[in-house]
Length: 147
Image (cartoon, rainbow, N blue to C red; front, side):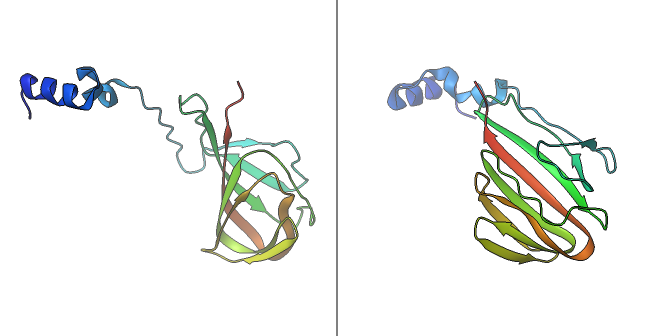
């Protein structure tokens, strides 16, 4: 716990205002708590029949210029087999259950529980072959906030 004199000296040495040491404590940090089963069922643009999206939270106006959307996606027997999506930003997938052949551009990846895929979402992507159903995976999409 430095004294005010010490903080003033440090601020002068670093050429920053003394308030810079306290900014992180004053800033609002958003948080979203979603209880199990309470995710909002939603449809994303380009969603195909039988793809169930549960939005688990949304941090849009964080001040860092990035929007983040985590989804729990469930694919079943009724799900379309060959959907591809394209959108801005990056996407991270973590397989929870089942197996899928997942396309990204010209490549296809066999995803099993515990596998991950992290990619530029502007390339055509999506589950191409549903190998073992039901398939569930966590998808986290991040993209720049529109101004």
